[in-house]
Length: 316
Image (cartoon, rainbow, N blue to C red; front, side, top):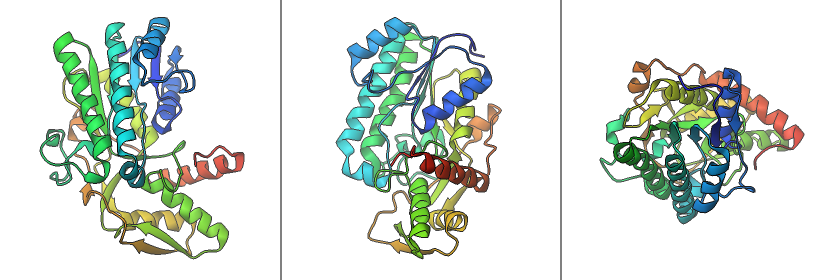
C-alpha cells in the first residue's frame, strides 16, 4: 500500500474525477494532499511544471487532468483536445520521472478503443483498428499517455500505471448542454424542460447506441485500489461491465427528473460508437468491483445538481 502520510499530488483536482479522488483520499486518511489550480500552474508548460515539482516534491501522483467533453466538443475542437492533453500528459510524466516520484497513476478513457472493437472490450483491443472519428483527437492523446507510462516503465523502471475508465457521472460533472457528456446534458435538459413546462426533450442520435456508466466515486475507489495493489505494464479497464441503450438512459433520467417528458430523437446528430462496454475481468481479478447501481447514482447526482444549482455552483 502507498504511504498515507507522504506528499501526494492530484493533477486536475477540481474536475469531476479529481474532486472525487480528493474526497476518497481524505476519507482514507491521506494527510498531505498537494493541489494547484490552472490559474496558478499551466500543466502544458514543462518549465512551470518542473518548477512546481521541484518545490513540492510529491511522492505519488494521480494524473487525472485534461481537456474533456462530449461528442459535440470533441467534434468541433479536435486540435485543442489533442494538443492540450498531449502536453499535460507529457509534462507531468516527465516531471514525475525527473524528480523520482515513487508511483504515478495515469487516467485515460475508454474512447482509446477502436470503433468496431469486439464487445465487451478487453485491454488487448488497444490499437487493433480505426478509432471513432468523433473523438479521434482525444483518443490519440490518451493512447499517447498510456504509451508514455509504459515506455518510462520500460526504459527507466518508473512505477507508472494506467487505468481506463468507462463513461463517468456524478457530483462535480459538467452540465454544459454543448460541451458536456450525454448523462449530465440529459439531466439538465429534462430539468429545464420541467421548469419551463415543456413536455418534450431532444436527445442526440437514434437512441440505439449502447453505453456503460460508472459513478465517479466508484472510479476514485478503484484508482486508490490500483495504486495500492497494481504495479505492472499494461493498462486496466475500470467500469461496471453493464451497458444500456441511450434511449434506456434517457428514459431513466426522464423518470427521475421530468416523468411527463417525451423523448424526441434528433437522428441528424451522431451516435458515436455503436456500443462501448468494458471487459472488467482484469480489475475484478485484482479484487475490485463497482458498488453503485445506476439508479442510486442518478438519484444522488440529481440531488447534487439541485443543491449546486441553488448555490450557483454548477459547471455550465
